[in-house]
Length: 285
Ligand SMILES: C[S@@+](CC[C@H](N)C(=O)[O-])C[C@H]1O[C@@H](n2cnc3c(N)ncnc32)[C@H](O)[C@@H]1O
Image (cartoon, rainbow, N blue to C red; front, top):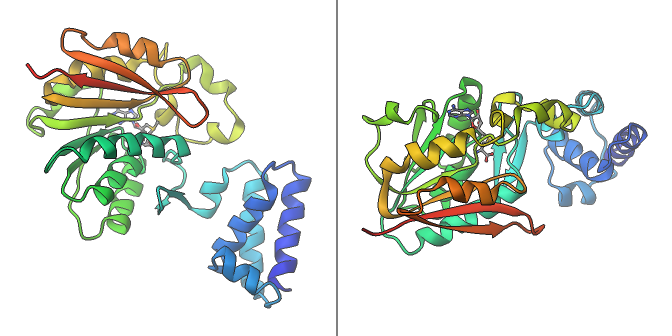
């Protein structure tokens, strides 16, 4: 069988099983299983593939058809120009989170030797992107889930092999427990769980296979923002910023969680025009 025949067969299976993005996903599966870039694949479409490669590609396709997210099927996903290992137990990095990184990186350009805490870091996509793009930043990543931590540690060593980042296993909802760990930093950034608990069961099938712990933001979805705005303020320098990603229509309420004697707030919009990011600037006293 040639790689083109294998590609066509995967594409058809995905399309027959109502996978919307079937052509692109067929490329992802082939690229991953044959270890070829898309360009190399297109240049070598008539090349024979081994039976082992074809079996592996078809096994991955069968997983995808069962509803497993494509990112988990291939075990990796690209984010801000780097490839992150992902799988069951860790949230798949989303494109809008790249915009949160961009916002924070822009802020850090005006600071020298800044320090940053990424709360609820999951795969590490936010904190590691910041470290990669602002090498003089001191970056801490805080995550509670042991399953997510395995990916975070692997991604830190793949993506920032020669830089030092601090990975902290802890509970963001217990800010007091970090008194011995942190001094004050310049930036606290977070994309915490923000879905309302009663909404989780109605999410798309693929999203429901992502860890509930990465999604569930409590009864009204704001548990983490409440604790971070009030409880993590003690770890933020005067003049520093808190930067959040949030769900649609949550930004205004999050602004109200900041003490307005101490913070000014700003809402920023993602590429779809959704109110997706909240920046809290701590006043210089
Ligand atoms: C929405 S995901 C974000 C992951 C990553 N920052 C990103 O943007 O892709 C939220 C993360 O918070 C972690 N988490 C949930 N509860 C936590 C807690 N109490 N303390 C620390 N991390 C927690 C989850 O395991 C998950 O990795």
